[in-house]
Amino acid sequence: MKKYLLPNTGDFYKANLHIHSSISDGEMSPEEIKKAYMEKGYSVVAFTDHEVMVPHPELTDGHFVALTATEISVNQKSDCDFCYTKAYHLNIYSSEENKSCFNSFDSSKIWLNQSFPFITPEQKNIGIKRIYTTDCINEIIYMANQEGCIVSYNHPVWSLQDYTDYIDLKDLWGVEVYNNLCAKDGLLDSPKPFDDMLKNGECVFPLATDDAHHLQDCFGGFVMIKAEELIYSSIFSALKNGDFYASSGPEIYELSIEKGVINIKCSPVSFACVSTDCRCTYTKRMDDSPLTEITIDIGDYLKRVNTDMNKRGYIRITLTDEVGRSAFSRAYYINEIME
Ligand SMILES: [Zn+2]
Ligand SMILES: [Zn+2]
Image (tube, rainbow, N blue to C red; front, side, top):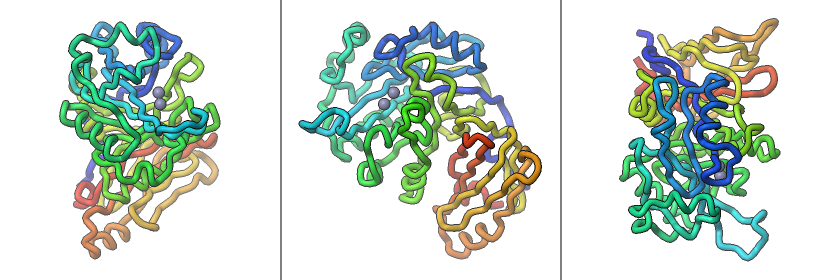
């Protein structure tokens, strides 16, 4: 029986899940951001201004959803130049459209005059002191999840972070595999932290974002969300469930598995790879013309995983086009792909 890995029902909605407006250190107003993204075919933007959670329900209509979010930072205590300072940057996305305060708020982190007016009276009574430890980050993630939010781990390369900084993080929802601003600055992220977290047993989703502060940073990294309706609750549920893929270019139109064979319909790509939790990979390269319909038989991996009773086994798919841009699926676990 054919199993759809990206849902067969609903529609795709293009989204940028990381941007800064003039409420923090971005150049454009929220209204200008909506206009610019809608002109490029996007339906969803998450407004992730630094350190304050500012809802934009006035921007949501039948053609656009403004997700309520914030980006928080936790810097390593250091006497050295900031350019050498490690930092955790996390995006917190709210399930509630009108949420304007969050538990891990830290007033000492606000450094921009234009952000102060957005601290709500309620928020003034809530806050913690953040410290650069895995325990503190896990507490922040836990508190965010408790209040119905989901949390992403942003741009590890820009943050000067390595395996030791992220491997013990628990219950993250997403990790950036591509951040357009960082890529433009030559600080290119990779799927390595995503893979490391998956292999460590964390069910985390890959994200490609813009992290735009100016118009020239926009339209590089996006996610395609498959949702039933273009309304806040439906878009948030699809994100939380992993009904999306991340990309810096290629588009996936259909992703399914039948009798151990992965079927992909996509925009033209030159290379397709099915990765797994082990050394076992499956690849297809273009011959004369780019690939748009791809079938990859992973039957022997499924047999191996079944024999090993390795229930955490998974596959994930990467498609790369001729100019090196990639689309990343989430990981699909054995119980999702076995018949
Ligand atoms: Zn950041
Ligand atoms: Zn950012």
